[in-house]
Image 1 (tube, rainbow, N blue to C red):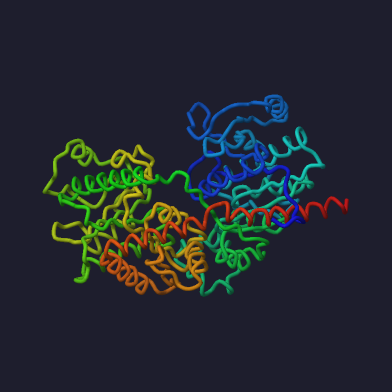
Image 2: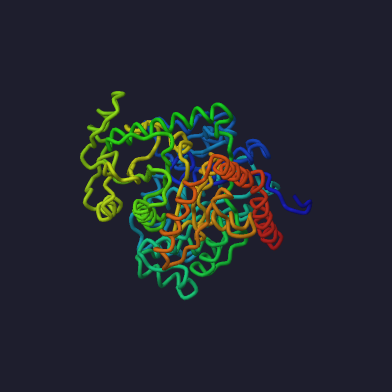
Length: 554
């Protein structure tokens, strides 16, 4: 680190996903926490929403410690807090704030946001109010803590993640200008909405006007808070170059720094434990598949999977299904394929007939009805994937050498079918496929290669771009990651290339497969936080310098 860089004495970070495991931002924060905690012990405080009253949260360890007196002071200021540790490596300090009381003054808060920063919340709906009240409360928490424990002699940074925390960042910018503010968008709300509405994003990116598209797509409130926060913080950041271009075009603000998402591999089993965990995962996969389809699977079966949020086009789930259908017709496929789609849908619990079969150790030779899905769905007639599988006639017939199973549940260890956490299942894959159309970074492929599972992704994902950058040319499956060129319009080409790559991978001998698995792990190690944390220190320096200039001018 350069000697002339300004380094914070204290850091606050706010996110909806602090102690709340709902998406990729949770992984960003929770895996990076130990690196920061090691560098500045207990000088990093994470702030998250408290909606666990009366319920146990295994991610939170409550302990007031030396903050009990401040907690009383904060209560007198209208802040109801729970203080403790985030139950993750490093066990950083965390403050959970009850934001419900601020709904009573919601209109006043929104009015002030408009008067101070031009934030237009008049068209707010859905989760906007809940996120904004949390964000405002988080800003108040930081203000209170700063005046109680810190002060102008300390270099303090407040980092806000996603539009859901924008209002708090702006509150800090106005009420505690000595604090340097950083805003990180992990995906622009309007970019995601453009893709989700089946509009081409990349070819027309320079022609899109973010404000106009927000009005057209009924995204005005979220776009406004995101745009205004980006324009008024000391340092605006995102997670990849591809999203950086998106921010510049749709938010009219060039990013000051790119904070590439890192990872920690301390939970990946080593040596014999790895082998045992992989064997257990495959045994469970084959047992579930047998009980569902009535077919017997052996270790020569090629297990492939995709996972993530159920964003059908954005995550490339549609391409995945199409590629599996193409593979079924291939005569040069050397191994049979068992494919899993592990994305949480609107499910109504595990199928009882499947649960009953899994309770015994019988090998079944007859399928269950609808042998393509593990859980019941609410309104299955409206489900994208099952409709596509039926359209493609991918119904797991006995003679099919490619079988696809939809797992529409979080793999949290208590899903009722696998009853294994996601990582304990992931380790059993031979190959993972993430053919994303819209993917600012992509933790799923990074997690995959950390578990020695080579993967396929696309050039429209931040991770895919990074993999190509590391290699210095197009990365292929032999390098641990196959990066397929994807555009707005080449669905057929992507699907065909996936099929070709799987055929090539299935034909590899053990030595070649082991080399690909080793290359995957080598690449994953380049993404550890000890390498990527330097980008954060760059952002801290930028933000602190702006705050210092502001202070010097007062």
